[in-house]
Image (cartoon, protein in one colour):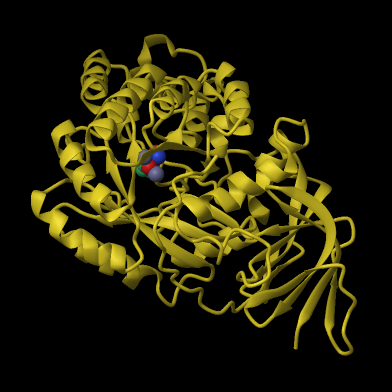
Length: 472
Ligand code: URP
Ligand code: ZN
Ligand code: ZN
Protein backbone atom coordinates (compact mmCIF):
# COMPACT_ATOMS: atom_id res chain seq x y z
CA UNK A 1 0.00 0.00 0.00
CA UNK A 2 1.30 3.47 -0.82
CA UNK A 3 2.06 6.23 1.69
CA UNK A 4 1.23 9.89 1.14
CA UNK A 5 3.26 12.53 2.95
CA UNK A 6 1.07 15.57 2.70
CA UNK A 7 0.94 19.18 3.76
CA UNK A 8 4.69 19.84 3.76
CA UNK A 9 7.13 21.89 1.72
CA UNK A 10 9.40 19.94 -0.60
CA UNK A 11 12.85 21.50 -0.82
CA UNK A 12 15.26 20.95 -3.69
CA UNK A 13 18.31 23.02 -4.71
CA UNK A 14 16.27 24.73 -7.41
CA UNK A 15 13.32 25.73 -5.23
CA UNK A 16 10.80 24.98 -2.52
CA UNK A 17 7.11 24.33 -3.04
CA UNK A 18 4.11 23.13 -1.11
CA UNK A 19 3.67 19.57 -2.30
CA UNK A 20 2.84 16.05 -1.25
CA UNK A 21 5.02 13.01 -1.83
CA UNK A 22 3.62 9.60 -2.65
CA UNK A 23 5.78 6.61 -1.76
CA UNK A 24 5.17 3.34 -3.52
CA UNK A 25 7.31 0.51 -2.21
CA UNK A 26 10.92 1.68 -2.00
CA UNK A 27 10.65 4.65 -4.31
CA UNK A 28 8.96 8.00 -4.70
CA UNK A 29 6.01 7.58 -7.08
CA UNK A 30 4.83 11.19 -7.41
CA UNK A 31 5.50 14.67 -6.09
CA UNK A 32 2.84 17.35 -6.45
CA UNK A 33 -0.63 18.41 -5.50
CA UNK A 34 -1.87 14.94 -4.56
CA UNK A 35 -5.09 13.81 -2.93
CA UNK A 36 -5.08 10.72 -0.72
CA UNK A 37 -6.27 7.52 -2.34
CA UNK A 38 -8.81 5.30 -0.58
CA UNK A 39 -7.06 3.27 2.10
CA UNK A 40 -3.75 5.09 1.64
CA UNK A 41 -1.66 5.79 4.75
CA UNK A 42 -1.34 9.55 5.16
CA UNK A 43 1.50 11.20 7.07
CA UNK A 44 0.80 14.81 7.99
CA UNK A 45 3.83 17.03 7.38
CA UNK A 46 2.06 20.34 7.99
CA UNK A 47 4.53 23.02 9.05
CA UNK A 48 7.46 20.77 8.12
CA UNK A 49 9.90 20.44 5.25
CA UNK A 50 10.22 17.30 3.18
CA UNK A 51 13.91 16.86 2.43
CA UNK A 52 15.91 14.20 0.66
CA UNK A 53 17.65 11.87 3.10
CA UNK A 54 20.99 13.36 4.06
CA UNK A 55 24.19 12.01 2.54
CA UNK A 56 27.28 12.21 4.71
CA UNK A 57 30.32 12.15 2.43
CA UNK A 58 32.83 11.50 5.21
CA UNK A 59 32.57 8.97 8.03
CA UNK A 60 34.87 6.51 9.78
CA UNK A 61 32.74 3.80 11.38
CA UNK A 62 34.40 0.94 13.18
CA UNK A 63 37.85 2.18 12.25
CA UNK A 64 40.73 0.44 13.97
CA UNK A 65 43.08 3.27 14.90
CA UNK A 66 45.86 1.15 16.38
CA UNK A 67 46.34 -1.19 19.31
CA UNK A 68 43.35 -0.99 21.64
CA UNK A 69 41.81 1.97 19.86
CA UNK A 70 38.68 1.20 17.87
CA UNK A 71 36.27 4.05 17.13
CA UNK A 72 33.40 4.17 19.62
CA UNK A 73 30.83 3.84 16.85
CA UNK A 74 30.49 0.58 15.03
CA UNK A 75 28.22 0.01 12.06
CA UNK A 76 25.22 -0.56 14.32
CA UNK A 77 25.41 2.53 16.55
CA UNK A 78 26.89 4.79 13.88
CA UNK A 79 24.17 4.15 11.32
CA UNK A 80 21.40 4.36 13.92
CA UNK A 81 22.77 7.72 15.01
CA UNK A 82 22.91 8.77 11.36
CA UNK A 83 19.24 7.95 10.82
CA UNK A 84 18.23 9.84 13.96
CA UNK A 85 19.95 12.87 12.45
CA UNK A 86 18.30 12.54 9.04
CA UNK A 87 21.24 10.96 7.24
CA UNK A 88 20.10 7.92 5.29
CA UNK A 89 23.39 7.12 3.56
CA UNK A 90 27.03 7.67 4.43
CA UNK A 91 30.03 7.16 2.21
CA UNK A 92 32.42 5.63 4.71
CA UNK A 93 36.17 5.25 4.28
CA UNK A 94 36.89 1.59 3.71
CA UNK A 95 40.55 1.47 4.60
CA UNK A 96 43.46 -0.42 3.11
CA UNK A 97 45.63 -0.98 6.17
CA UNK A 98 49.41 -1.39 5.88
CA UNK A 99 50.27 -4.65 4.21
CA UNK A 100 46.77 -5.18 2.84
CA UNK A 101 45.69 -4.83 -0.74
CA UNK A 102 42.91 -2.35 -1.57
CA UNK A 103 40.70 -5.31 -2.49
CA UNK A 104 41.25 -6.79 0.97
CA UNK A 105 40.42 -3.41 2.52
CA UNK A 106 37.11 -3.29 0.69
CA UNK A 107 36.25 -6.89 1.60
CA UNK A 108 37.01 -6.08 5.25
CA UNK A 109 34.59 -3.12 5.19
CA UNK A 110 31.86 -5.26 3.66
CA UNK A 111 32.30 -7.75 6.48
CA UNK A 112 31.92 -4.95 9.03
CA UNK A 113 28.91 -3.24 7.46
CA UNK A 114 26.88 -5.83 5.60
CA UNK A 115 23.93 -7.00 7.65
CA UNK A 116 24.80 -4.64 10.53
CA UNK A 117 24.26 -1.17 9.12
CA UNK A 118 20.71 0.09 9.51
CA UNK A 119 21.10 2.97 7.04
CA UNK A 120 22.20 2.61 3.44
CA UNK A 121 25.91 3.02 2.82
CA UNK A 122 28.64 3.21 0.23
CA UNK A 123 32.42 3.19 0.39
CA UNK A 124 35.37 5.29 -0.63
CA UNK A 125 38.66 3.38 -0.47
CA UNK A 126 41.32 5.09 1.65
CA UNK A 127 44.97 4.18 1.13
CA UNK A 128 47.27 4.19 4.16
CA UNK A 129 50.22 3.76 1.81
CA UNK A 130 50.73 3.61 -1.93
CA UNK A 131 52.24 0.81 -4.00
CA UNK A 132 52.45 0.87 -7.81
CA UNK A 133 50.73 -2.52 -8.04
CA UNK A 134 47.56 -1.03 -6.53
CA UNK A 135 46.85 0.42 -9.98
CA UNK A 136 45.95 -3.05 -11.27
CA UNK A 137 43.19 -3.39 -8.66
CA UNK A 138 41.48 -0.08 -9.30
CA UNK A 139 39.26 -1.13 -12.25
CA UNK A 140 37.65 -3.95 -10.24
CA UNK A 141 37.07 -1.60 -7.30
CA UNK A 142 35.35 0.90 -9.59
CA UNK A 143 33.29 -1.95 -11.04
CA UNK A 144 32.26 -2.81 -7.46
CA UNK A 145 30.91 0.72 -6.98
CA UNK A 146 33.89 2.37 -5.30
CA UNK A 147 34.33 5.44 -7.47
CA UNK A 148 36.28 7.66 -5.10
CA UNK A 149 39.50 7.15 -3.19
CA UNK A 150 41.39 8.93 -0.44
CA UNK A 151 45.01 9.68 0.26
CA UNK A 152 46.60 11.41 3.23
CA UNK A 153 49.11 14.24 2.87
CA UNK A 154 49.25 14.47 6.67
CA UNK A 155 50.08 11.83 9.31
CA UNK A 156 53.82 11.57 8.62
CA UNK A 157 55.21 8.11 9.30
CA UNK A 158 51.84 6.36 9.28
CA UNK A 159 49.53 7.19 6.38
CA UNK A 160 51.23 10.08 4.58
CA UNK A 161 51.97 9.52 0.91
CA UNK A 162 54.54 11.41 -1.12
CA UNK A 163 53.94 13.78 -4.03
CA UNK A 164 55.28 11.36 -6.63
CA UNK A 165 52.98 8.65 -5.26
CA UNK A 166 50.04 11.03 -5.55
CA UNK A 167 50.98 11.75 -9.15
CA UNK A 168 51.15 8.06 -9.92
CA UNK A 169 47.78 7.38 -8.29
CA UNK A 170 46.11 10.31 -10.05
CA UNK A 171 47.37 9.21 -13.44
CA UNK A 172 45.57 5.91 -12.82
CA UNK A 173 42.33 7.32 -11.37
CA UNK A 174 42.09 9.83 -14.23
CA UNK A 175 41.91 6.96 -16.72
CA UNK A 176 38.97 5.49 -14.80
CA UNK A 177 37.02 8.75 -14.53
CA UNK A 178 36.96 8.62 -10.74
CA UNK A 179 37.98 11.18 -8.11
CA UNK A 180 40.34 11.18 -5.14
CA UNK A 181 39.84 13.05 -1.87
CA UNK A 182 42.88 14.35 -0.03
CA UNK A 183 43.54 15.05 3.62
CA UNK A 184 45.50 18.26 3.08
CA UNK A 185 48.08 19.01 5.73
CA UNK A 186 51.85 19.26 5.44
CA UNK A 187 52.65 16.10 7.40
CA UNK A 188 56.42 16.50 7.33
CA UNK A 189 56.60 19.97 8.86
CA UNK A 190 53.86 19.14 11.36
CA UNK A 191 55.80 16.09 12.56
CA UNK A 192 58.89 18.26 13.13
CA UNK A 193 56.89 20.86 15.05
CA UNK A 194 55.24 18.19 17.20
CA UNK A 195 58.65 16.74 18.09
CA UNK A 196 59.91 20.20 19.07
CA UNK A 197 56.98 20.90 21.39
CA UNK A 198 57.22 17.50 23.05
CA UNK A 199 60.95 17.96 23.56
CA UNK A 200 60.14 21.23 25.35
CA UNK A 201 57.75 19.39 27.68
CA UNK A 202 54.66 20.87 26.04
CA UNK A 203 52.04 18.15 26.23
CA UNK A 204 48.71 20.04 26.41
CA UNK A 205 46.15 19.50 23.66
CA UNK A 206 46.40 23.22 22.88
CA UNK A 207 49.63 22.32 21.03
CA UNK A 208 47.74 20.18 18.55
CA UNK A 209 46.42 23.24 16.70
CA UNK A 210 49.60 25.18 17.40
CA UNK A 211 51.71 22.62 15.54
CA UNK A 212 49.37 22.37 12.52
CA UNK A 213 48.38 25.93 11.60
CA UNK A 214 46.01 26.68 8.75
CA UNK A 215 48.90 27.50 6.42
CA UNK A 216 49.75 23.81 6.55
CA UNK A 217 46.37 23.06 4.94
CA UNK A 218 46.75 25.82 2.32
CA UNK A 219 50.20 24.56 1.41
CA UNK A 220 49.07 20.98 0.93
CA UNK A 221 46.01 22.10 -1.05
CA UNK A 222 48.25 24.20 -3.30
CA UNK A 223 50.66 21.32 -3.86
CA UNK A 224 47.75 19.01 -4.57
CA UNK A 225 46.35 21.44 -7.14
CA UNK A 226 49.66 21.40 -8.98
CA UNK A 227 49.84 17.60 -8.95
CA UNK A 228 46.22 17.33 -10.14
CA UNK A 229 46.96 19.80 -12.91
CA UNK A 230 50.01 17.78 -13.91
CA UNK A 231 47.98 14.57 -14.04
CA UNK A 232 44.90 16.31 -15.47
CA UNK A 233 42.89 14.40 -12.86
CA UNK A 234 39.91 15.41 -10.69
CA UNK A 235 40.50 15.76 -6.96
CA UNK A 236 38.78 17.16 -3.91
CA UNK A 237 39.94 18.35 -0.47
CA UNK A 238 38.23 16.62 2.42
CA UNK A 239 37.27 18.40 5.65
CA UNK A 240 38.39 21.94 4.73
CA UNK A 241 39.00 23.80 7.98
CA UNK A 242 40.27 27.12 6.73
CA UNK A 243 38.94 29.71 4.29
CA UNK A 244 42.42 30.26 2.83
CA UNK A 245 42.33 26.71 1.48
CA UNK A 246 39.35 27.69 -0.67
CA UNK A 247 41.34 30.58 -2.17
CA UNK A 248 43.70 27.91 -3.43
CA UNK A 249 40.88 25.70 -4.72
CA UNK A 250 39.17 28.63 -6.46
CA UNK A 251 42.43 29.62 -8.12
CA UNK A 252 42.97 26.16 -9.57
CA UNK A 253 39.32 25.85 -10.61
CA UNK A 254 39.69 29.14 -12.51
CA UNK A 255 42.61 27.52 -14.32
CA UNK A 256 40.50 24.53 -15.30
CA UNK A 257 41.55 22.02 -12.65
CA UNK A 258 38.63 19.85 -11.58
CA UNK A 259 38.99 20.58 -7.89
CA UNK A 260 36.11 20.26 -5.39
CA UNK A 261 35.90 20.84 -1.64
CA UNK A 262 34.12 19.40 1.37
CA UNK A 263 33.83 20.96 4.80
CA UNK A 264 32.30 19.74 8.07
CA UNK A 265 29.96 21.38 10.61
CA UNK A 266 32.71 21.75 13.22
CA UNK A 267 34.62 24.19 11.00
CA UNK A 268 31.46 26.27 10.52
CA UNK A 269 30.08 26.38 14.06
CA UNK A 270 33.12 26.10 16.35
CA UNK A 271 36.51 27.77 16.63
CA UNK A 272 39.86 27.29 18.29
CA UNK A 273 38.81 29.05 21.51
CA UNK A 274 37.60 25.53 22.44
CA UNK A 275 41.28 24.66 22.99
CA UNK A 276 41.55 27.35 25.68
CA UNK A 277 44.40 29.84 26.20
CA UNK A 278 48.05 28.89 25.70
CA UNK A 279 48.86 26.82 28.80
CA UNK A 280 51.50 28.17 31.13
CA UNK A 281 54.39 25.71 31.28
CA UNK A 282 53.00 23.65 28.39
CA UNK A 283 50.50 21.67 30.47
CA UNK A 284 46.82 22.67 30.77
CA UNK A 285 44.71 22.34 33.91
CA UNK A 286 42.64 19.12 33.87
CA UNK A 287 39.29 20.78 33.08
CA UNK A 288 40.67 22.78 30.14
CA UNK A 289 42.53 19.72 28.88
CA UNK A 290 39.42 17.56 29.00
CA UNK A 291 37.39 20.15 27.14
CA UNK A 292 40.04 20.56 24.44
CA UNK A 293 40.05 16.84 23.82
CA UNK A 294 36.40 16.93 22.80
CA UNK A 295 37.51 18.84 19.71
CA UNK A 296 40.78 16.98 19.13
CA UNK A 297 40.70 16.32 15.40
CA UNK A 298 42.81 16.86 12.31
CA UNK A 299 42.72 19.42 10.91
CA UNK A 300 41.96 21.31 14.12
CA UNK A 301 39.48 24.14 14.66
CA UNK A 302 40.63 27.54 13.41
CA UNK A 303 40.25 31.11 14.59
CA UNK A 304 36.70 32.40 14.51
CA UNK A 305 37.18 34.58 11.43
CA UNK A 306 37.08 31.40 9.38
CA UNK A 307 33.50 30.53 10.35
CA UNK A 308 31.78 33.36 8.50
CA UNK A 309 34.12 33.10 5.54
CA UNK A 310 33.38 29.39 5.21
CA UNK A 311 29.62 30.06 5.38
CA UNK A 312 29.97 32.60 2.56
CA UNK A 313 32.01 30.18 0.47
CA UNK A 314 29.42 27.50 1.09
CA UNK A 315 26.62 29.88 0.06
CA UNK A 316 28.49 30.98 -3.07
CA UNK A 317 29.17 27.49 -4.38
CA UNK A 318 32.89 27.43 -3.62
CA UNK A 319 32.44 24.67 -1.03
CA UNK A 320 30.47 21.82 -2.47
CA UNK A 321 29.26 19.47 0.22
CA UNK A 322 29.32 19.02 3.99
CA UNK A 323 30.35 15.71 5.53
CA UNK A 324 31.07 15.16 9.20
CA UNK A 325 34.38 13.29 9.52
CA UNK A 326 32.51 11.33 12.18
CA UNK A 327 35.36 9.48 13.92
CA UNK A 328 34.17 9.02 17.48
CA UNK A 329 35.93 8.08 20.69
CA UNK A 330 34.77 8.15 24.30
CA UNK A 331 35.94 11.14 26.32
CA UNK A 332 36.12 9.46 29.71
CA UNK A 333 38.12 6.48 28.57
CA UNK A 334 39.57 6.57 25.04
CA UNK A 335 40.48 10.26 24.89
CA UNK A 336 41.48 10.30 28.56
CA UNK A 337 44.25 7.72 28.14
CA UNK A 338 46.78 9.94 26.41
CA UNK A 339 49.60 11.65 28.28
CA UNK A 340 50.44 14.07 25.44
CA UNK A 341 48.54 15.87 22.69
CA UNK A 342 49.98 13.78 19.86
CA UNK A 343 48.56 10.60 21.43
CA UNK A 344 44.99 11.76 22.05
CA UNK A 345 42.46 9.72 20.06
CA UNK A 346 42.04 11.88 16.99
CA UNK A 347 38.51 12.57 15.83
CA UNK A 348 35.05 13.53 17.06
CA UNK A 349 31.43 12.48 16.63
CA UNK A 350 29.15 14.45 14.33
CA UNK A 351 26.85 12.30 12.24
CA UNK A 352 23.65 12.92 14.24
CA UNK A 353 23.87 16.70 14.43
CA UNK A 354 24.93 17.58 10.87
CA UNK A 355 21.50 18.62 9.64
CA UNK A 356 20.33 20.46 12.79
CA UNK A 357 23.64 22.33 13.19
CA UNK A 358 23.67 23.47 9.57
CA UNK A 359 20.05 24.50 9.71
CA UNK A 360 20.39 26.30 13.01
CA UNK A 361 23.66 28.13 12.35
CA UNK A 362 23.28 28.43 8.58
CA UNK A 363 19.67 28.72 7.43
CA UNK A 364 18.10 30.34 10.50
CA UNK A 365 20.43 33.40 10.46
CA UNK A 366 20.21 33.59 6.64
CA UNK A 367 23.78 32.51 5.85
CA UNK A 368 22.54 29.86 3.43
CA UNK A 369 19.10 29.29 1.92
CA UNK A 370 17.01 26.16 2.55
CA UNK A 371 17.71 25.22 -1.07
CA UNK A 372 21.48 25.49 -0.58
CA UNK A 373 21.10 23.49 2.63
CA UNK A 374 19.63 20.63 0.59
CA UNK A 375 22.35 20.96 -2.04
CA UNK A 376 25.21 20.71 0.45
CA UNK A 377 23.70 18.07 2.74
CA UNK A 378 22.36 15.72 0.07
CA UNK A 379 22.19 16.46 -3.64
CA UNK A 380 25.73 17.63 -4.33
CA UNK A 381 27.26 14.64 -2.57
CA UNK A 382 24.85 12.37 -4.47
CA UNK A 383 26.02 13.90 -7.74
CA UNK A 384 29.72 14.05 -6.97
CA UNK A 385 29.80 10.53 -5.59
CA UNK A 386 27.78 8.89 -8.34
CA UNK A 387 24.56 8.26 -6.43
CA UNK A 388 22.27 10.69 -8.27
CA UNK A 389 19.35 10.50 -9.08
CA UNK A 390 18.75 7.36 -7.06
CA UNK A 391 19.74 9.26 -3.92
CA UNK A 392 19.88 12.90 -2.86
CA UNK A 393 16.65 14.20 -4.37
CA UNK A 394 12.90 14.09 -3.77
CA UNK A 395 11.66 13.12 -7.23
CA UNK A 396 9.58 10.43 -8.88
CA UNK A 397 11.69 7.31 -9.41
CA UNK A 398 14.23 8.11 -6.70
CA UNK A 399 14.63 6.02 -3.57
CA UNK A 400 12.11 7.16 -0.98
CA UNK A 401 14.79 8.35 1.46
CA UNK A 402 12.92 11.23 3.00
CA UNK A 403 13.29 13.45 6.05
CA UNK A 404 10.38 15.30 7.59
CA UNK A 405 12.16 18.21 9.20
CA UNK A 406 10.57 20.69 11.60
CA UNK A 407 12.36 23.96 10.83
CA UNK A 408 10.99 25.83 13.85
CA UNK A 409 11.38 23.32 16.64
CA UNK A 410 13.81 24.60 19.26
CA UNK A 411 15.72 22.16 21.41
CA UNK A 412 18.90 21.75 23.43
CA UNK A 413 21.65 19.27 22.59
CA UNK A 414 21.89 16.62 25.30
CA UNK A 415 24.08 13.65 24.63
CA UNK A 416 21.84 11.53 26.83
CA UNK A 417 19.16 11.81 24.15
CA UNK A 418 21.49 10.90 21.28
CA UNK A 419 22.19 7.53 19.70
CA UNK A 420 25.92 7.28 19.03
CA UNK A 421 28.42 5.10 20.85
CA UNK A 422 30.33 7.91 22.56
CA UNK A 423 29.81 9.40 26.00
CA UNK A 424 29.67 13.09 25.08
CA UNK A 425 28.68 15.64 22.51
CA UNK A 426 31.06 18.52 21.92
CA UNK A 427 27.92 20.62 21.36
CA UNK A 428 26.28 19.75 24.72
CA UNK A 429 23.96 22.52 25.84
CA UNK A 430 23.77 24.35 22.52
CA UNK A 431 20.30 25.64 21.74
CA UNK A 432 19.28 24.67 18.22
CA UNK A 433 16.38 25.52 15.96
CA UNK A 434 15.28 22.83 13.51
CA UNK A 435 14.93 19.14 14.25
CA UNK A 436 14.51 15.90 12.39
CA UNK A 437 11.00 14.55 13.01
CA UNK A 438 10.52 11.44 10.84
CA UNK A 439 12.79 9.57 8.45
CA UNK A 440 11.93 7.12 5.70
CA UNK A 441 14.59 4.83 4.26
CA UNK A 442 13.58 3.38 0.89
CA UNK A 443 9.93 3.91 1.79
CA UNK A 444 10.06 2.44 5.26
CA UNK A 445 9.58 4.58 8.38
CA UNK A 446 12.78 4.26 10.43
CA UNK A 447 12.64 7.31 12.72
CA UNK A 448 9.59 8.81 14.32
CA UNK A 449 9.69 12.02 16.36
CA UNK A 450 13.48 11.88 16.31
CA UNK A 451 13.68 8.34 17.69
CA UNK A 452 14.88 5.42 15.57
CA UNK A 453 12.44 2.52 15.69
CA UNK A 454 13.61 -0.66 17.43
CA UNK A 455 14.63 -3.67 15.33
CA UNK A 456 15.49 -1.80 12.19
CA UNK A 457 16.15 -4.03 9.19
CA UNK A 458 19.63 -4.00 7.62
CA UNK A 459 20.49 -1.15 5.31
CA UNK A 460 21.82 -1.72 1.84
CA UNK A 461 25.22 -1.29 0.19
CA UNK A 462 24.76 1.10 -2.72
CA UNK A 463 27.34 0.68 -5.47
CA UNK A 464 28.15 4.03 -7.00
CA UNK A 465 28.47 5.24 -10.57
CA UNK A 466 31.02 7.68 -11.91
CA UNK A 467 31.20 11.13 -10.34
CA UNK A 468 29.51 14.19 -11.78
CA UNK A 469 32.39 16.62 -11.41
CA UNK A 470 30.35 19.72 -12.22
CA UNK A 471 28.94 20.29 -8.72
CA UNK A 472 28.55 23.83 -7.44
O1 URP B 1 40.72 13.74 13.25
C1 URP B 1 40.32 13.12 12.30
N1 URP B 1 39.90 13.76 11.24
N2 URP B 1 40.33 11.77 12.32
C2 URP B 1 39.90 10.93 11.28
C3 URP B 1 40.88 10.70 10.21
C4 URP B 1 40.92 11.81 9.20
O2 URP B 1 41.90 12.51 9.12
O3 URP B 1 39.96 11.98 8.43
ZN1 ZN C 1 41.44 13.35 7.18
ZN1 ZN D 1 38.22 11.64 8.08
